[in-house]
Length: 410
Image (cartoon, rainbow, N blue to C red):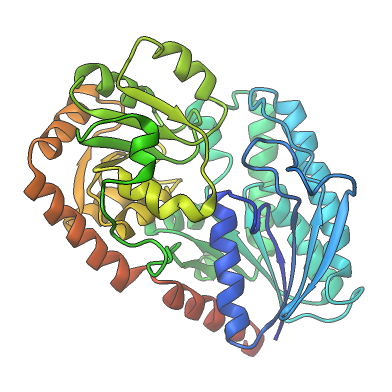
């Protein structure tokens, strides 16, 4: 089958969603599909196009399984400038749409178009691309927008929110299938579409490469670079944004001076957090590491944390959770009760879930694990067993393979 894939990031870009779509494409290619990927030039690490990729707004490369077309992403690092971000999203989506129509041959028939959101605008681009190729749209939703932006206060303008919701509903109804990461996200999306369209919403979770990310020894070179001794290290690895409640990590570092704390990543909130914690000697901020160091970075943390602001647990599923489980490390999640991640940790026995934005509960959970190495080991082992059984790339690849074949049979 011929598939066109539109996504904001793809290897070698370092964004977590890029790693997800890269592996989905690899799995589908292994099943014999022809794939034509349209994505951005690598820019996520520093919010600027990386060295070696500048100079041309569009680059096309043939691959053994099809092609990759990379277009200019119009990057910017000021998330508070909504007009600038909207222009960037629209500009990227327009270029991606033109490249999508060309992918696999101008207007030649394809069997499906897979488009990833965010950005939400890429869904409409995917639908138009599907019209050009006479192919159904599979809309892959990683985070429900604009719900998350509204709940964090990132967008408060009612006109912008109303326009985004209209675009969201239009895209859902034009997609032949909408894939989401959890039952919570499915309920959210299903509530926004006509009753007859709810059967088109499918849960396919993200995954982690359990062959690459494996439990490792804690005495890593990365630990030595951080200049920590043998004390337990509490690790956050991922986007440093305003939805992640990383002020909890700063507060925990103040409350637990005998532990080491590391925020490994970059994002719009990093500068502000660093300034607010300049006097916290046991807290380190470190930028994204090369992809091949990810297993080492994850092994360095004795306890991994996944904080998310209140109200976001049913519209976002932090993919970093699966990486932590694969690394065999216990998790402290500060996320709305009854949503996907707390349910997962409870079912797997892989960590402790506490209410979001509750500093005392967050610190108490970290303290509990830091003071009990045996408990850390039990939670870590249980999480590793769960992720191997439930979130392998093979299982997710099979799910997408079945879905695109079903769309063409129906």
